[in-house]
Image 1 (cartoon, rainbow, N blue to C red):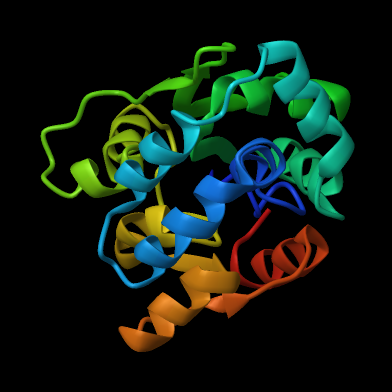
Image 2: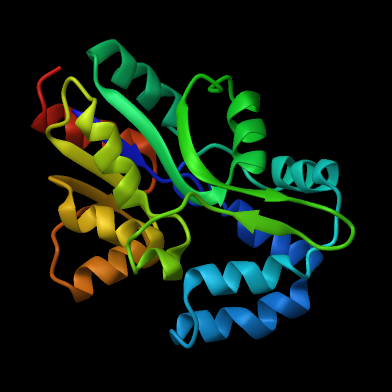
Length: 217
């Protein structure tokens, strides 16, 4: 079994990017997020515009995130179960590696394989970057999670069933292709709109309990 799991708002209880923008560029949050919700702009453009106005050091960004969010209940136990059962887990995120690594490290989970974007924080503004993709939709999401999952699956000894766990727009493409989907927040609403079946969850005890009834191991 291959499990692709989102990070912000999925592994964590709060979205790290939201924490940064709300804390250090609240005027950008108030102006740009409504445009994103109405689909006037895509996710990538929203992130670029918001973070260009975030003027802080990397140390301040990491400190703010560590103080403002935590690992969702059940995730460490979920990782232990996945590893013990011989399944494969990868983190696929439209967030920033510079924020993801400290959170995982603080939870004793730095060994997890992570695919994400990244950012360079400075007092002049924050610049972001994502892996290149040939998919047209990547220009809206920034991070093409479907590219990552297909690449990982191609070299995985057990790519099936494919499980996706997520909470937002950047998870939609992978959720459409996955065999088993766990969704919350805006991803759940998007899947309902497209009539795609999924399992709701609030913690990783929920996820593990369902998977243990569906997949041997």
